[in-house]
Length: 185
Image (cartoon, rainbow, N blue to C red; front, side, top):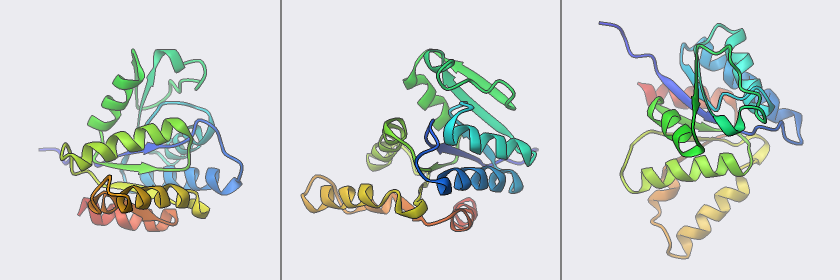
């Protein structure tokens, strides 16, 4: 019987962002996943932070699983040289395939797409559809305002305090590695 390879879904920007630490964290995340023999599951783009995390994982010999919708293939420069490369018909199918093929979710800095992906898996966790851990890699405090908003939603009575508990906030890739190790047992 073969052992289960843990898979980590990484949501992150298709842009590099305004500060170099974001790309550095993406590269460090990809390399860390490969070093631990954890499969990278991500949006299959070769641009922005997506490209950084994938190239770093590949460069370190890691297993990569990418999923891209056909309408973003050109814009996100679909990375065809991944271990597994899947083209979907739409964004909904992309998110489902990524989620179904992962054991944990990590969210690096990103924009509206990353927020959409985060809130979908967070909502699914809130309503009991899964128990996968969700990690926010809070590089240079990138997610501080989002966390303040989540706390506000709770304080204003629109969610239970447990919503905040579903987000594991880590300040750097070393802390992320430790938290993933604990989650995977």
